[in-house]
Amino acid sequence: MKQHVGWITGAAAAVLVAVGALTYAVAEDGGTSDTPTADSADAGFARDMAVHHQQAVEMSYIVRDRTDDEDVRRLAYDIAQTQANQRGMMLGWLDLWKLPKVSSDAPMTWMGMGDMPSAGEGSLMPGMATDAEMKKLGTLSGKQAEVFFLQLMTAHHKGGIHMAQGCLDKCGVEVEKRLARTMVNGQRSEIDLMADMLRERGSKARS
Image (cartoon, rainbow, N blue to C red):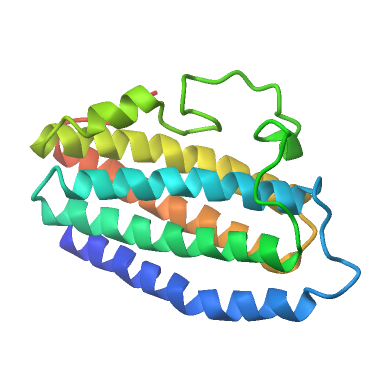
């Protein structure tokens, strides 16, 4: 397990190194006629994934306070740092494009899923935890908190991958598509890691 978590730490560091390059690249493109519109897939993905990432960051910091397990704490830290930086990039692009960070459209409208029924209050997009689940995570401790976090984050990552793949299909800004591809690859690796961690705790991802 230590080897797996060390790899994720390295991956998070690689993402941080890439942040500057990606931001510079989109800044170079920022004044061209290819700047996205407010109702584009590029803008919709940036807005929605920023919200999606914010919950992952919150979830990660909750579990770091609910367990002493170093593997879970390192994973949570890596997820929080990676997704906070990616979120900052997406919000920065919206600023660069002079587009609003919120929209009157329902979440996932850019993917043609604006009429998607919610799984519960707080669950705005695929994989997101409900308010009740976030509250429950904050009441658990030890192994129970670890298992519930790993289950919630696995579902969260699967929803994030679905959204990132939607961007790969629909987005027009190449630097944003590169970030989406990074999300797909990184979160798939973390799902595999979390499956191993759940097995070690006698559990598995929720269906």
